[in-house]
Image 1 (cartoon, rainbow, N blue to C red):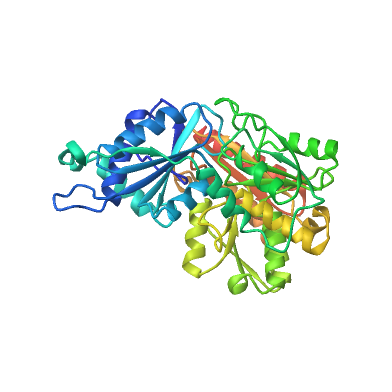
Image 2 (image 1 turned 135 degrees about the vertical axis):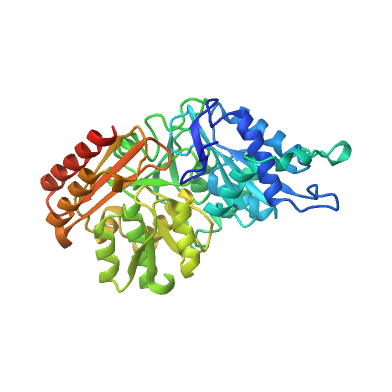
Length: 454
């Protein structure tokens, strides 16, 4: 069995290896073994697991397979249905469950699906734990664990999970503020937050114009949401809204639009929030965690305000690990995963949007003005299809091309070349002061990779 876990769990086309119901059942059994509280015979005792999903058609298949796997190990399973990934992290902690499982392929099209696992504290598993699960799957360990009779587990549906999460999210918004007078365009991406998000903003007082909130199992992320925010920007113009909020399919990342219909990405959201937290002495260690993909302009803006930026590997799991290691409370990605560790243990689109709205209300400044606190450097990103994700160091021509571009940029730019954690792609990003120049550099590196690995 090859390596299953990528940067954000296991992911693939649903009902094709590795994302099959057979594997989902095996993952349930292996995860139960890893997290179980044993009785005298070694069987799980009073072990509880929460399972949630987004709105993909294949979620039914994988949900039942996972539940069967857990129940076959004697685990008590709680099914919460469609709920954002951060909501499942919250419910896992709230119910004192031993683990939480999310069935979602995040921002990918509906034909994909995935499995992400949280520990009892609502944190995604570190590499070591994922490797342990893979080792269990490849061994005969589970064969002797076959509880029978009353020791077989059962699955129960939690009908009020949505209400619990709504209350939790609303409590992250300052009690003395409301959203009265704010017009919001909300793009729910036909995803996991389609019921929750409109209620949150409406109950806080906003006038909400919701689009893409009629999921049918096949339209999640389909030309909508955080990855395709164009329709949100158009709707902001049409409704003369103060802000547009586009979520992704599992509600852990967000892209905003200002009142002019212009995009506000994750870097700009982090800049707005970090600068406000610095001004109020709320940013722990005066430090923000970003990734190598974040714009240089973010680092410049934070440094000018007396803070600093440290960079973690790409993936919100690694951002959270870095935040915990250094006792920090804000981190995120340009893609819109923003983590407020004072409130939740993973990226949460609704919390990020509410933080920006609170700053708008308190300062009286429009989003277009707030985002100008950070000046973005030109940045070009190209995805290159690769047959195999081999170490770039094995290909001297690729290494030479990258080094030549880095030398030409000097301190006025950056080059980041990495593989996607979920797709057969090499991501080439070049940043600098001259857009046309960096575009040429990206094309040169992409051509070199394509010639060697495409």
